[in-house]
Image (tube, rainbow, N blue to C red; front, top):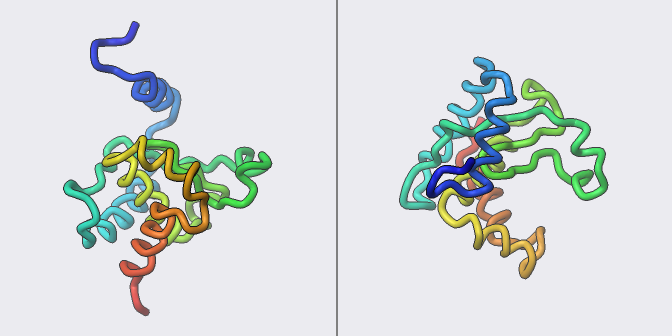
Length: 139
């Protein structure tokens, strides 16, 4: 039974977290590195909250027609990855974590923007690409 103030999305995320194994040290480290990069930016009033974010290797998802064009996909606090974490670029994790950050501040606006702006030039995609590019180590 739902508690007062809980949404279907928060209940679904809670159920998913209870089904997932605990994050590995590599997953926690990848999130910490990506968060540190995003923390250098002032895009939103509060920094990204990674306490409930999970990076999940789900290659089967990217075999589905809609997902074939992506290597990562954000759904609330879940980030689905085509490749294993060790094979995934830090820029992609930063990009997807930026989407988590966007969702934490304007979830409905972000979701609806893809309907009227499309994907390639969507302001949220542009912002996530920007976040990954400007925080990249210039080596």
